[in-house]
Length: 91
Image (cartoon, rainbow, N blue to C red):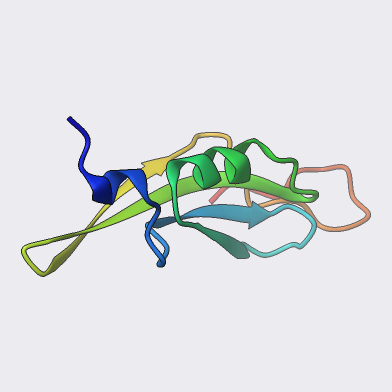
């Protein structure tokens, strides 16, 4: 049986999707917070120009201790220099 708390989304972010900018030469992260699993799905399935999804972080408070789960994705890249067709060197 679902509790009433699970039915209503919280007024604070429960996580964030972390994207890597692909239009700049350096590793630049952009984060988009979400408050529910529905928002998570919308953020992760929407098209984000010049960005690729790197990871999703989901937060939780258990016994007044913050915990998080991070889901990483292999498709992440550091991007490429504007005006070039060659990918940037791997680390």
